[in-house]
Amino acid sequence: MIMKELDTVKLIFGLKVHYLRQQQGLSYQQLSEITGLAISYLHNIEKGKKYPKADKIITLARALNTDYNYLVSLDADKRLKPIVDLLHSDFLKIFPLELFGINMPKLVELLSATPDKVNAFISTVIKIVRNYHLQGEDFYKTALRSYQDLYDNYFEHLEQAVRRFKDENQLPQAPPVKPGQLERLLARNHQISIDREFLAGQPALKEVRSFYSPGRKVLFLNDGLSSAQENFLLAKELGFQYLKLQERPYETRMAEVDSFDKLLNNFKASYFSVALLMDEVEIVRDIEDMSRWERWDGELFLELLTKYDVTPEMLIQRLANILPRHFGIQDLFFLRFFTGPDLKKFEMTKEMHLSQLHNPHANQLDEHYCRRWVSINSIRKLRALQDIQNQEEPIVGAQVSRYWGTSNAYFCISIAKAGHNDAQNSTSFTIGLLVNDKLRQLFRFLADPNLPVRDVHTTCERCGISDCEARAVPPTVLHHNRVKEQIKETLEALEKEVRVK
Image (cartoon, rainbow, N blue to C red; front, side):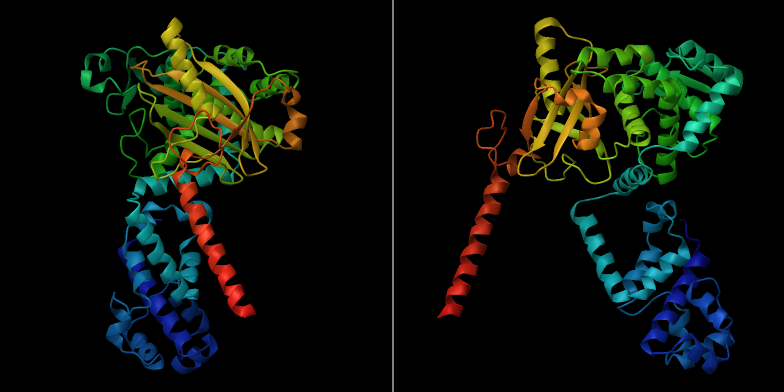
């Protein structure tokens, strides 16, 4: 929602008229009778659609007991100032309100309906942003996650685009798609060539897996990529081209998230890539096969990586697309964790929640995530296998995680893999599914008594599990909260005692 200067002028003028009319207790009918202006015209003024000529502004100023200069200025009194500041700010550029069905008239109506409450809310948001050092990038990513939740992480128009693309290019439904096929399609359909040498010769670019040069029509790929990684990058570029996505990043991972449209288009191309490589009909069949397992079989699950020639992240993400749409499993989360060689700090680098904000989720408090999660256990197990037998392939773990102090439990599948350029770095990808009757009916293996079940929490600092063998730090936040609760209870008891006397 990009505001032009003239639009801002109209909106500020309309807000002032709306606010002053309400302050005077005038209806549209009454203001129309006083000024001689049509009711519909007054509506359009207050909605920021019309800006009257000077003579009509003078008439409005008299009717509203104010002066001409105040109405036409871009400043406002204390009560309207936060709203005016908001219209002048970059917030409307940062947050894609139109994506959620909020157009400018709706926004103006919201801002002008109860300005005191809205002002307090805006001021609170600004303070939160400053205190937590939130940037535009944080808003963009949060908006994207909300957008995914809004559509249950399944996008029919992108699935249809993939089906059309396959039909037009006579690609078979059966996996896997080969990098050579994708490379030929880029060359034939879009005149894009592949360069696998340049990036490899640039030490400063060793972390850049790919870069697309629109001027030269060349997709640069770094060396050391697996066929699964190449598949994703080639199919993603096909997505950018086929969907005609103009505003986009050119490197694999966005170095700077400076536009929501760029982030959204990057998501669309990535979704297209995964859907192209993991055919919808085929993956539904695979999940149906899983539903008949009497016991969880991690090795059989990992065979899907080979079947589709995809990365662990792509497989877990595809499950998060398909389960809500085809199996009605909508209470789920996706997490990506990263850690360095010392295994001391586990950082959540990506998350997506459907239906609600499930635990675990990212926090800004620099606390220690619970080591009982399969997301972290799978990484630690991978590192141990690397030390013992030079484990190079991804490993999978699964468990039912019961959240301490609640009735919630999640069935979690986590795949851990070594870093691309440094095997001492590790990443895990986890999908968590809320255990309920629907999930039990889908997956028979949830009744297997040998399926691991563990009590978990969010962070060590907040955990009350007394015999935890994996605790990283003491439960300081929990102790602090208990002290506060004791103070509250003691004061309440004292108050009751005083009343009795």
